[in-house]
Structure formats: C-alpha cells, structure tokens
Length: 318
Image (cartoon, rainbow, N blue to C red; front, side):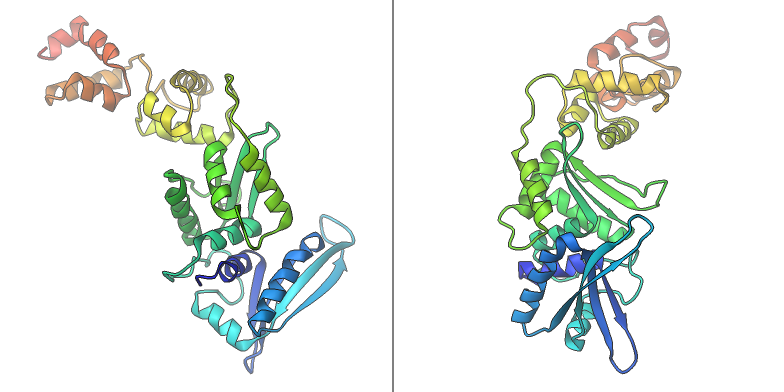
C-alpha cells in the first residue's frame, strides 16, 4: 500500500464505506457521500478502473431526519478479489466503527492514509475566531492510537485525548501551529482528496500568528493546560508545549482555579499544607532546592522564601 491513492481509498472507505458479504461469494464495498462530493467518487472510480476493477456510481434522493430531498451518490465495488484484499488488510465486514485499525504493512503511505481519515471523519479549517484547527473523530481505540502516533511523528506533540463523555468517542483536535503541520503534511501536493477540504487546508496553511497579545483559549488548549497542571509540569514547560507566554499560562491557571476547574493553584507561588509536606519530604531526602522547585512547579525564589519560615527551620536541616 505504498501508493498514495490506494492508502487514501482504504482509509476513506474505513470512515465512509461499508463492506458486506452474502452467500456464494457475493458482496460489495459501498461508499456513499453527499452529492456535493461526487467528484471524489468519480476520481476513485477512475483509479479503480485503471487497475482493472469495475466500479459503478449511482445517485439517489431521500428524506432524512435532518433534511428533505437529500441527494447522495454511492460508489459500489463488487470485485471478489478486491474485497478479499480489503479483508486481508484488516477491513471488517459489516458494522465496523469500533473495530477499525490501520493496516499493518510497512509500506503504508502515511500521507495518503491520514488524508483519507480526515476527509472521511475529520474536520479542517478556521474556527469562528480565525484559529486554524484539524480534528479527527473515531470510536476505534486502535485508529485513535495510530492517528496520535502520526501526529507525534510530524509535530513532536502526543495528544492525550480520552473518550468524550457525551458520545464515548475519541475526538482528537489540534490548533494553530500543530494543525498547520498536519495540514501541510497530508494536503500539500495531494494527488486525491475532497476539494472543499483542500480549500480549507489552504486557509489553514495561509494562517499567520498575530504578533499582538492574544487572550482566546481554545477548549482543547484549556483541557491540555489542566492535564499538564495536574501532572505537575512547571509553568515555563507548559508555556513551551502550548506555545504561550508563561504569564499567559499563569493568568489562565488562576482563572481555572477561580472557576473550580482545578483543585488548587497548581504551579503557583502560593503554598498549601500538602505542598508544605512535600517540600519537607523532598528536602529530607537530600534533593536540591532546584530539584524541589521543579517537582513542585515552583520558582527557586519561592522555595527559598518558604524555607526561611520558622516552621521549616524547626523541621528541616537547612
């Protein structure tokens, strides 16, 4: 599956296709889309025809729960050899949403494969605030892991997304520079994709960070900040990860505390009883003040100030 178009077709079919089988080796792979994206199905049919695989394209109009006279187009592939190849690569027959996984082949074209995922079950563009984003939603744990691994390979950032509470699915979202990096990786010089998503990718790639101060925090950024604070990361490290100024991170942390979203001012210079106990323990273990400051997400000056208190003089050998 080194060919970009083959990898794209496999991933796109995982998202928007359905593989069915009946008796006497009958069956088909069907991919149904809104009629506005029919050009993609025509392109896929042409690719299949060049490989000697016959594919038919049909159109239908029906009423749905959301729209009347909704028009869709469907690509159907009946080839038994083609269907057997899909199954050998791990494509499930029938209901598949939580069974999907990336094909286990060393020659997989990652650019084409992940573009197929985004075109199928992803979103890309600019938010209402003009912030570039790219996201992918899936019910499959294995597919979520594969996509996050690709993100880490391209950006160096490993998302920590868990299943959301409402739908119990993974919704992996990137914004700003990380979104641009993925968009550049999968859409730049793409040989096949949905035209409207290519247009959105171009908007993402054209975005430039404003040099002026910015205060807006995307929800996924805030979730990442809370996660990093709870893990004890220092403010300066969090600022580097989120591509924010340390002062901006500190202000947001204070707001989260006021809103009750974090239990205490994690990473601040304010002290609570639990942090006092931890500091005493670290110092008793022989850790340096710098090491204690890192573990407590405090500044060295804050550690020095706290150690000057009479309580520490009574309990810790200074």
